[in-house]
Image (cartoon, rainbow, N blue to C red; front, side, top):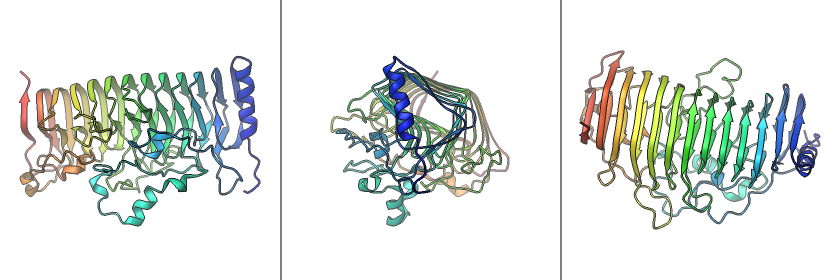
Length: 462
């Protein structure tokens, strides 16, 4: 396809013209539009009409390149993808009042899903323990050198320090490392998106006043909807006042949510654990999380809900309610305080408190990993309420698993598999100060030789 006609200049020219006139709408009509980097400007709405496909160009085929990854003096503590925004199909920085709306489609055919990890020298907990057996060649493919990223785009949409942004009504297929990455944004709405992508879905980092509503996100290889609070902007900014509602996350084979076949041939993610597709807070937690509500969401063929603090910061006042999970590929609930401390020397041990999980049901849960609440002796998870929880596991765990007592593994990357198979089949809690349980049902469809519950260094709330 060398010499294929590119729409990059025409789209960017129309955006600049609309901005110069005080704002307006740039419409991409039905048809296929091939492009490298599109630069958003304040006051402009980019609309993809019905039948429109905005296709990410391929530098190896289409005689061009994506905007270079801008220098970032704060790129030491998080991976390459989180540290740069301009190497994307659509990007905007320091803007106000922008929107990208459907009902058209973005096809990230020419994007890469790969990128280097962080440059942090300690590297403790940088990769999940499940990846320990991968060869050097496999790791190099998953985490290439920075030089290999020249000219490549690895995000469909990237927004940095944007106020009042909407991404609404789009379909995104093959979104690269991130289908949507929003960093340091305020008053952000992600609504009615259909995302079927080859790595992360919606990543919201150091943002405030965020609504994620009505989105369907299929991500077999990584997290579907994830909140983070990294140091990508050079300061500890919390992610706060976030609502995630009426969403569905899944880990079906790539593209099969879009075509309706819902394939189940892929069994593991690149981290060598089972397929992902979940809602998660973490791993990066430097700025902390406050006032987050997750409600009325479905998890299908995915990992469970994960709340993680390992890089300092505090997670507080999180409510997850009315969640339905089916075909859960790891622990249905995973709360973790760890001690990776990926950050400057003054990074302190993180904390988690005031967590409410209620009206949650999980069915067809694989037996290896029980619901897990795991703090540390020096930072127990405080004040956790479990109310109206039903967990139905496949069962079949052998008696020898009940004898296992893994260590706390404070520096390890947080995943349920970090501890190996759980010593119980239902709920395992350790280092928790104030655990309140009201109406917890644990069942197995086949017998399981392990006990249902194990508490270690847990103070139950009165």
